[in-house]
Image (tube, rainbow, N blue to C red; front, side, top):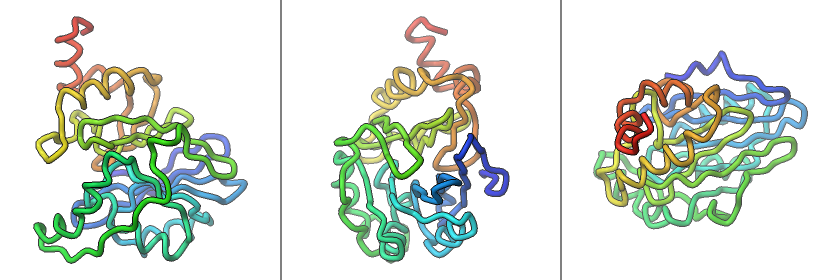
Length: 227
């Protein structure tokens, strides 16, 4: 689980995480300590807890960006948008998954209102930008068609694409293992080894550690003759 009290700081950047919902998903608040504006990544539930964290940080949430549209990453979007007026962004390739959120929730015994439609789609932008903060948008399909990671200042918000010693599952509708491995190896492994990976579940890691120790990554690199 992420340490929500010991956050990475880079210059004016402040990042804190909170674990939310029955799926124990990591939601991240990424803010600028000077402008006090923030981006909320993957509000998967317990919106009151997320808003409390933002208030504790002294941040105003201006953007909500979801790495993908599975229910454990989007269930808090509507409530947070209603409280903050923040714009909501999601990759267009995950819009069909977003529309099925209430049905997916029922399968887990949950009652969930449909999330709002995104104000913009991540396939139309290269960066998430608010006053004093810019994150690169990296499309990493595989876990879902629209899975997306966000990167700034050697911090990678990897959603469910890359985990410590693991990867996101690809056996759900829209999943594609070969595509996911290409996303990781051809895009994420290009980042500096020192990059801290802040995933959608479980503990943080680094790109360098996953390059050397992640069994899925090692197998892919070996298959490519790059191990």
